Length: 262
Length: 266
View 1 (cartoon, chains in turn green, purple):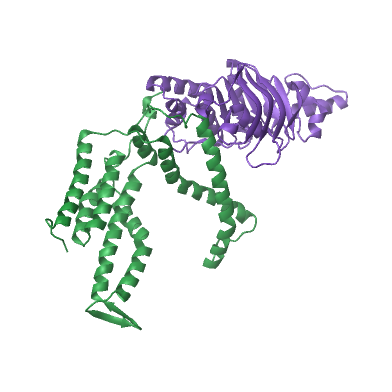
View 2 (cartoon, one colour):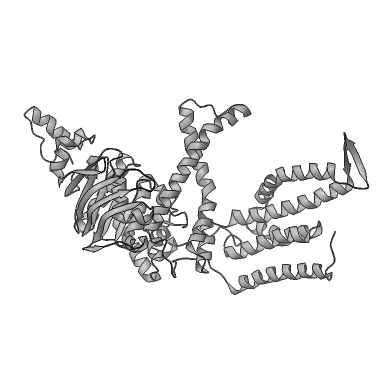
């Protein structure tokens, strides 16, 4: 039995980066976008931390599409609220009692740019990192198995619930439930699905925790996993640079040493 | 030997005992079948015999669970896991969700025990060989057939090298072909000397596999004896357990003065 049954290499160099490196990149891009603000800084963070990774992983189109989709609802509500209710000197147009101001558009723009960059960074991380690789790496670094299990179970929960929902929907359709057609019919069809999906998810969680208990999951003490994602000094250095760089910029902004970008 | 001595068990918050007056011995290398109608307490007995009840799920246990004469009271579940393994009915719910390959999934138990990488790999290889899953070592555990997934669950427990293996309806989520495959693996385990306690609704799975069969009804043991005698006992049908097809066929032929030729039914 070959030892290549241990771990699975990713399809690209970016996929094969240590999960903590990808976490650091996503975290710095997200926090930097929100804390530094403006337009230029988030754009630079996108260009420096998200774009290269997305290109190497051949996921640029998917990252852009998903991040826009994920941030769409919030962006629309931010735009509506900011444009129409934010006070400003320059009125662009009026709708009833609301004045759409240039300042409102600028504010909405700044928020939306941050949202999209954060969504893109997190989407790139999600698409290129197997939850299991992240869990294995955290365990190797001494994280509690319970914490890592909670993380893995959370990341695993949604696809498993979707799988279960498909099965429950098929079973309910076989019993005459209408889940297709107009939006109202689909929404009505959701109601009898929610209960079985949630209950079966809870039952599965209970059984899984018993099965893990039976495999000594609750034991405290060191573990020696057969595989953990590879790491390197170079990646460690990059992680430190990212974190220290962001800290330095934020500190510089706080004391006025770093100018605010547009 | 695994022993339940005057065991009674009540689930947390329940007003009545789910098990009462259970005296059961599982000798090393013995294969014992556990039958009974729904809600008879088979799954509960499996949880108690494995030590998970009350250690993991709470509840009140009266009586004793003993391994080689020593009580297991106060033993944490991870200690018992190295001596008594348990496999549940649904293969999907036994996957940890934390591993990327079958090999890593099977290795998880030994890793949790804190064993060295070499010992973990040794146990993992052996467990995969015993269940015939070596060729699937690199497969994603989420991409297995029902039978393969249940064999993976069995492998994962075997890697802990327990002396006693408890299986709670291991074929209930499987089709007939997959159930036969699991049954073949259990037969092989039995010949290697692992003692098995197998709770099953499908008495056909137990037929020809078990030395002894115990029948439960409403939390009490109502029958305990040699497999053939218990499976052919008329009171089994009275409590809602259908005898194996082979025995029903033999009985039907016997009523007409005929006998089932040897070797006709596997």
